[in-house]
Length: 433
Image (cartoon, rainbow, N blue to C red; front, side, top):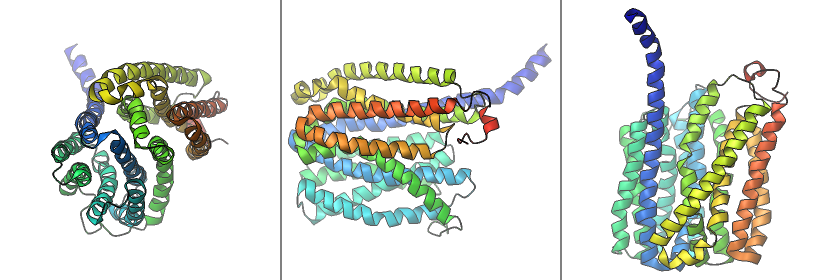
């Protein structure tokens, strides 16, 4: 019996180890993001608000929205493209490093224009610092691909802890206005971003070697993948940051602050669940069952339950957190908590649903859905903001994000009809015939 038990244990051990490692990687991913965002929400951003006041804080949030759109779309697009290239046997550091260098041209131009439009002329030093922040942030969003490629989530965790440590150090610049009000907040964030990039540069390989800036024979294919993913991420980034930009354009910095606080917890809660998408992708990659109505119906019902649960948790947490950290703005922000949080949660739930659906349909549907979403988003939200202000953007965001969720569900159910008889494995890639 002992011999049999020992043999069974030997067979099952690798599988158990993989599950334990997978769980550990998920926990480390979440903890890294919690560390970084915890410092942002508890120390960095409240420090900027206290130092500069509600109106100017809103202006700075709008500036950071520009940085986020640039860095998230370019850096994350290149990050995902590098992962795709690796799976297809055409990973090449030089292709992506050259792309990042070329991207610095539009990053510089857009950063300068945004700085003048939102804050006015703050001088050469501030503009140079802001350009540098935008550029380094692009590389920082790309940088964690080093640890994804090597499946080293311990260093992935350290990567985000280092960013948090840099933000903590930078917060003292803001508190004591060491470099002046404007230069201090830019430098504070720049410290965290720069430390993370330095960590990758010294410990990783993606920025090293004789081929670090040399194009490979697969450069054209890699660029095509990068541009496709950049476009998708640009739409996502604009959707996430559009509230700040639209409110700043059509109202003022104070409105940006109020709505930011109303959506704050919803965005953080939803963002911290994104590592789960990696787990979902892993399971779907191995799933060989049928994509039936029953299967997808269960997925849809689960998504709705999660959306409602997270919205309730977000509203409760918003009353606690905003009331504690932003008492002066709590009364105005609290009237939007329910629908503002629901809008953010539905955005992320729809994104997770899209990941599931893409396992069984062609990837073009993602670009189609996101493009339609962007068009409806602009057509609906601009007049709503102009006519109804914060209330308009609150209802508008909830409406377009629920419609996005419904669109993904419709696409999913439409394709279950083609998979009731054949399995995914038999259908090949899952593309519609």
